[in-house]
Image 1 (cartoon, helix red, strand yellow):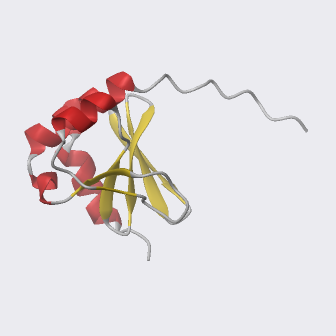
Image 2 (cartoon, rainbow, N blue to C red; image 1 turned 30 degrees about the horizontal axis):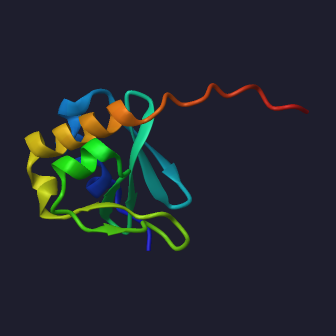
Length: 109
C-alpha cells in the first residue's frame, strides 16, 4: 500500500519548524528532507524518522521498526505527529547529526 499525498503534506507541515522541509516520491512512498538531508520516510501512511543518538534521547518513548522489508529500524512516530513543536524539534536534532549528502556527479553515457 502506498502513502497518501495529504498525509505526507500534513507530516511536512507539522515539522516545518525544523528547517526547509521538502519531500520526494520514491517507489510509491516518500522521502522527507530537512535542509537537503533525508531525515524521514513515509511508508503506508506512517512516519519513520532516521534514528540518531539525539533523536533517540528526545524520542525515547517511540518504538523502532523498519519502514519496509529489509530496512534498518527507524523511529516510528504515532500520535506525536500532532505535536508540531515536538516533531519539529525531533527533526531538527536528527538533521544536525546526519552527514551532508554527497554531491551527485553527472552520469556517464
